[in-house]
Image (cartoon, rainbow, N blue to C red; front, side, top):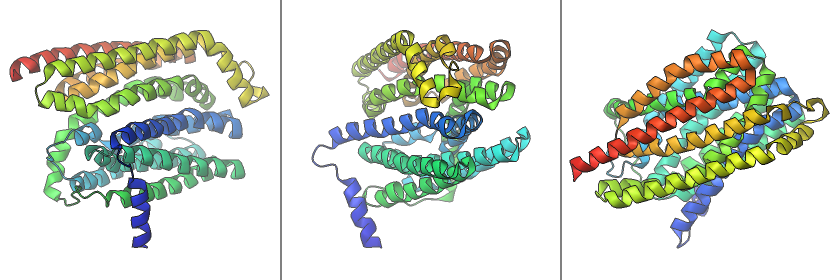
Length: 433
């Protein structure tokens, strides 16, 4: 068995003599597969199982499940991949992830108990929480792949795990017509994917240190705690409109809003193509005090994200109505007119997605500068705004109100991140210079 696993791992490891090119290609493929699945799964559930089941899936998968993914993830990816000096070993990160995944499962269960969902909805949503928590566990391997310079392995894991679990989920749903059964099958497939594409492969990397010490858990938690709280709050702000719809409207509304929200995944995907590969370069420039190269690269990436965002808004304005009409036809005759009426909210959400992509870049910049307190302060202020703004606008204007709440939150937060990052960069340059 070990011989088979070794050959399997060697097959996945192969990048040939052009590792940098493979890193870029597989990162793009993996990011695309992950984002594409996030975009279309709720739509397909609506098509196969109806609008109510689609809405339940959308909330469980892309809202509460993703929130618990963040608990499992604990904001450690940017910290781990920029830990170039080996302050913590992979074994430390791995055993810390065991603890955070347990906390995530407990947090999801408590949320469901407190909200008093019907048993069927609660079961489906909890299984989706499990699915996302396993995804969060896989991230510790994928972060280590990137830290060791093997981003292509991260992309392969994302690609193959996503294909495996999504295929199993859709097959089970089509055969059983049961959302609960399909979610259970997806959880099993996700766990198998981690074993095949992450745990087996990392043993082939000679520089990975699997040793760990219990006493390292506390300082690692402390080092990442503000990042975790910040990422947790970030996703709450990002999803505040979805939480408000779940609380104030029916499950079908969650499904419809998730569909008009899909373009944000495309924007984030495109932004990720340019952000992820250059993080190590930005980190290197800052560590080496090459401030000119740091600023030049940052400005170039910012401009590219801005251009992509403007392109997306233009396409949404001119093509949004016919695209939404096509989606209605794909869903079936019962959905006629259900999406086209949300053309303006669709465009508004796309614009908000552009601001979110930009603030993500500057979030990583502040991580590189190790300005965790600044990040936390920005998120704390915006969370307070989101708690009141999103429910109020949803109660007043429904799905349209949710779209405008999302845009307002993203625009203000992006302005805060960009401004603080450049101020911190200038201050840091003076101190280091």
